[in-house]
Length: 186
Image (cartoon, rainbow, N blue to C red; front, side, top):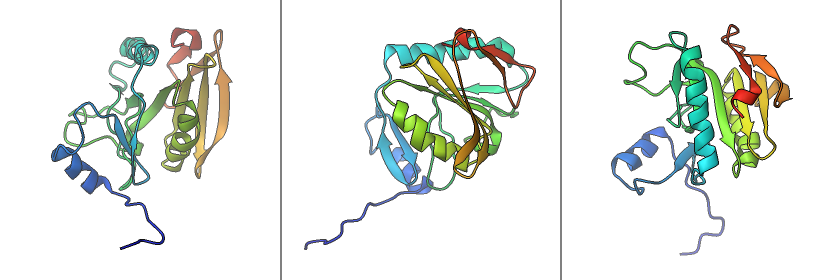
């Protein structure tokens, strides 16, 4: 049988989770569900991992009691997307999200650390996060040693974009009492 116009098989969260529970994918797979597609992500290199660790250490004391830190864990955005952002600050939750994955409304700040994934994070992920009303998305751009700050989601774009580098500082939009010197996280 010849299929004239092959179609993608898109999957949803329920099927995605059943595939995981059935151990269909190797344990060390780096996969994310984005817009119904299962995408294989690049392996995490030392520089990328080091920056995620730096973010965890930087924010640990600053957000205690104000937010929950989350690194490289699922974020359920809709029935077709469950990315695993590099770093998030989440609204406090008494059970620390042990009974459900966080959703967009739980996110105070989302950060992707990008070197080889820069174009993907700047385009597909930025549009996905804006569409789901993530209030503040930072792209820690390791190639250009800067942080791209995206705020004020409007449709699948952000109305505000700033690029900051060493010497710049910024207050978080959702936790304005917390100011970050960009050099501390680059």
